[in-house]
Structures are given as C-alpha cells and as structure tokens.
Image (tube, rainbow, N blue to C red; front, side, top):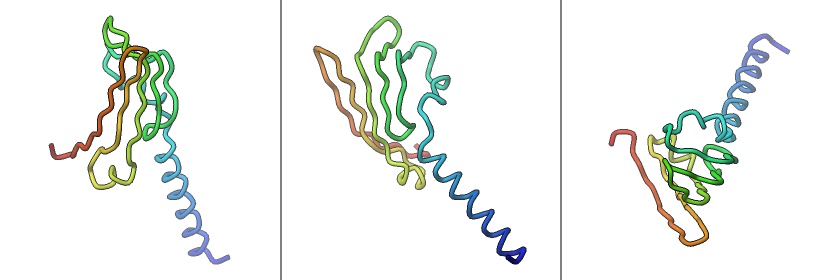
Amino acid sequence: MKRGTLVLTIVAGILVFLAVLVLYLPASWFASWLPPQVRCAELGGSVWRGECLGLTVGNGAYGDATWDLSPARALTGRLAGGVEITASTHRARALIDLRADG
C-alpha cells in the first residue's frame, strides 16, 4: 500500500469514528452540564435520543422525560426535535426548534 493511500485510509477511519461517536454520545456524559437544581434519578440513551427517569427540579418531582433530537439539524446550527414529560397524573409534549444565532 502506498504511503498516501495509507494516510487517507487512516484519516477516513478517524473521521468515521468521530462521526459515530457524535451520533451515539451517551447522555450520561453530559449530566454535569445540567443546572444544579435539575436532577435525574437515571439518565439513559444518547444526547440525541434519551431519557431522564425520575426528573426533579428543585423540590418538585415531574416524572420521566424523554427527548428525540435531530443530529442532522444540529449540523445547520439548529437544535430541533421533541421533548415529552410523563407522570402518573400529567403528560406534556413540546416540539423545539432553536437556532444558534437566537
């Protein structure tokens, strides 16, 4: 194998690895980014599609939260997708579409 081909193969492999890593980033890696008053008893899934079981904000318990965000839209500087909070007595759903420029 030629040196140039080997370098291209290594670079392509690294890029694919990084793309897969970004697509499957565990949500638990970002738990420390939550405000101190927001807590999850159990955080699972990825940053793009995950769940927070036992969501509490301050002294209030809100049930479980799930989210499904679009990584493709993030490439355009937008955070878009759906968020749902479910508890025994209530359920709330929201569609979000946030831009990086406000």
